Every structure is written in C-alpha cells, then in structure tokens.
Image (cartoon, rainbow, N blue to C red; front, side):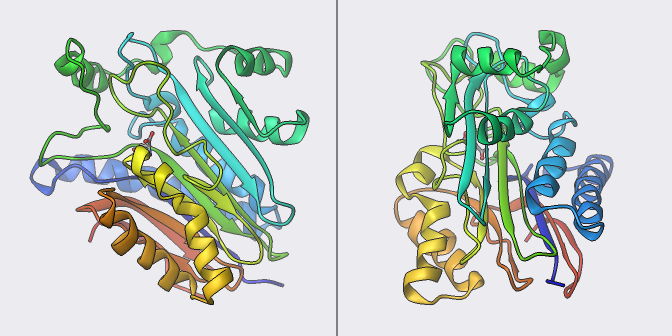
Length: 309
Ligand code: ASP
C-alpha cells in the first residue's frame, strides 16, 4: 500500500497577527482540522485522491471563513462569481469552471465537467446551463451573504480598485481554498476553489481555475494548489512550474516548491503560497506572505495545522 497524504489551504496572506483574536484563530484552526479529517479519513478508507480533495474542498467551501463557496467575496456588481478546478494525476484529466453564481460547491461542478463533459473548462452562462442540466441546485444570494465581506466590498465599491480578500497595505489576506492528496494506489489529485477578488469586474478570472497556473496534478511529479495574487500566478504558470522543475531538473518536491514561491514568483512581484504532495508521502507548504491557512497529514509524517510562519 502506498503512503497516503493530504494537504489543504484556506488562503495565503492571513489576517495580520495583531488583528487575529484567540477566538478567530480557534475558528480557523477548527475549520482546517475538520477539512483535513474529512480528506484523510477518505484516503484511509481507500477512497481515491480525487474524491478526497473534492470532499476536503467542499468542507472548506461550506464555511464562511474562507473566500470560496459560502464565504465568497463580493464583485463590483454586488454578486458572487466563483472559480474552481480539479485535476487527476493518473490520466491528466481535468475540469474547471469560472464566473459561476449560486452554486454551493463549485469544486463538485468542476469535477462533473471533468467526468461528464468532453471539455476541460466551462465559463459563465454555459457553465451554469451545464450545472442545471446535471442537477446542481442554485442557492439564493443570501446563502453567500456575510457581513464582514459585505463591509469589505462597501469600502472600495465606488472605486476602481479591486483587492484580494482582506488586503490593504499591511493586512493582506488572500482567500481561496485548495487540497492536494496522494491515495493508497499512489494516485495524485489537486483541487482549488475561490471567490476571487473583492470588487472584481469585467469578468475577471484569476489563476485558481486555470490548469497549470493555480492547480495541477501529475502522478510522475506532484499535485499542487496555489493561493495568492492570481495575475502573477497566471503569468508564472506556477503549479506547472513546480512539476516541471521536478520532471526536467530532478528537483525534490520541497526544492521545486521553494524555488517557485520563494524565488521565481517573488521576482515577478507575486505573493502567496502553495501546497503540494508527491507520490512518496512528501508534503511542501511554502508561502512568501506572513501566513497561510494550512494543514497536512501523511501516513509517514507529523500532522500540521498552522496559520503563521
Ligand atoms: N488566487 C486567487 C485569485 O487570484 C486569490 C487567492 O488566492 O486569494 O483569484
């Protein structure tokens, strides 16, 4: 039996320490622990990596604490537009959706795109038609309402600026959730889901639903889910870059993940982090921000649930 492992994130660039209360910290940690347990117990019981990452992300999407699913930020129009993607490392199959509204669990829709459409990426109205045809219900806008995110949006809604979840100069917190896993058969998978950026407009799409940028899985190398300043992560093709460094240059998982997050992405001005696993039970969780909501567990290593460095 292969080593099993899972890592999850709830966004890089956390609340600055000064703004984090013990109660909030406990709530974040509990939510991370719960999602980790969901994914790990599935792997333990023999489930596939793709099912484990989907269900871990569903758990994160269902809490208002993170910017994905229920906790998605407000767009410039006062709506919630969500993006998600999922990828299976054994066959390089992938599914992605962007600009979707009212879907409780965007990651499950991305998975259905992978399984049931002959396509990889569906967006906007078409993605919504696909969702309805495949039995997805539509939540009322109230389901996604959160007072904190509403105030965040009110603060900047009449300006041209858009911002990563929570960010202002010193207090930058990116949203987005993700999971990566290796199952008992040595298969890898990655899943990423986000509400994007507060006050975004013009159908802005970040790296999260883009295969190779915010999400990637390949059994020969690694599974990766990213969080951070999406525009830079797209330009850096970050998730695939980690895989390439392993494949072409023989880097270990940790070396490749560190090189991309602590060097390459910084050089082009990007901040954020990623979670990654390989097929040997290794886990890497690098970030170049003050913190990243993260957790991991493997059958050969220690359990991690952490927020700051
Ligand atoms: N990468 C996401 C995006 O740009 C945001 C995030 O990770 O918080 O949409």
